[in-house]
Image 1 (cartoon, one colour):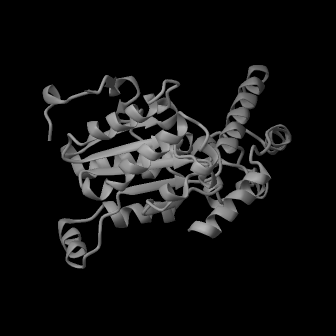
Image 2 (cartoon, helix red, strand yellow; image 1 turned 180 degrees about the horizontal axis):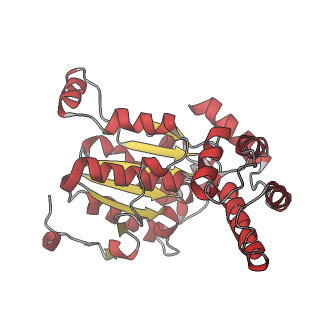
Length: 300
């Protein structure tokens, strides 16, 4: 592993410090992610193996996954899941791992060849480490279908450059690439074909919504409020994690306002929940749901 004093940050005039961040913003882990048990188990089976299990995998000729893609509707918690995964991997692999993240939107440049140079610099940078996890958020900002970008003199070469770098992942045993996208149906087919661990982050189930409600407002909600019924309403209304969080913040704000007039009214009651649900609606677009279902059927 490269020592910090030996790390190279600049490649062909590009300093990766301009768009790359090390570590994560918090210490969240899988215990903080509501639902997503299938996704958690998928990454556990792949990345959290004992030396004996890893040896057996190699003996069977099974290749390690290198390109994980989290996909799903906006606001479902893909970035949150990715950050939790990165922290779990950092804990599991201890000091042998470095964790970096950026958004593909930050890699985009208005200068000719600028985006390609950023991509090349990024992948050259992570080669320096014995083990590295790289998180690329908003993958669709760069990896767009080339049939839609063929007349774009800036984006088209960037897609080709990214594809070339992804093609070399099998020869980079030190790197695990984690990506996230709200619009997987906009991605280039050749790039999608490189994904070896696709994980859908769905809208929260009734159980996941109830788990979130209990965690965030369980101690301040009236005992007479039927959380199961509320959670079912959120599921039927197709609330994302983002929408449910907005509802929770609304309830907290309403409770604060209520206690200003009556300090004894220190719990969220059923009427407050009903009133909040009249104002907070799902942000999910039905057209996006249809496109995602079509994508899932065609690809995974």
